[in-house]
Image 1: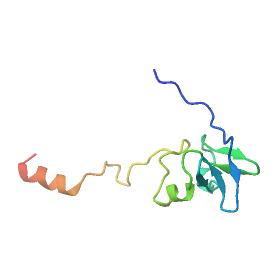
Image 2 (image 1 turned 135 degrees about the vertical axis):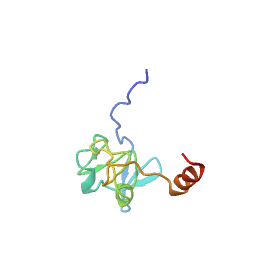
Image 3 (image 1 turned 90 degrees about the vertical axis):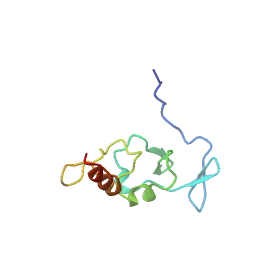
Length: 95
């Protein structure tokens, strides 16, 4: 059985004008949608996501796939999306 990783610390991170620099990556503070996520790590007076450096970009296309506080939703009709090309091929074969 796989062990669950412990809490990540931002030890060795440096606060710069561009943001928080950690292991050569400039990290941006978390956005409002991230509130409640278990991955958030506080550093000085701000909170950061050690999993993804630009949290706003993860939320731009919908739900962040790293979020621990949000579940994926099914579309409005309650159906799973099907690739239209595959659906037309199945219909042509008579399935």
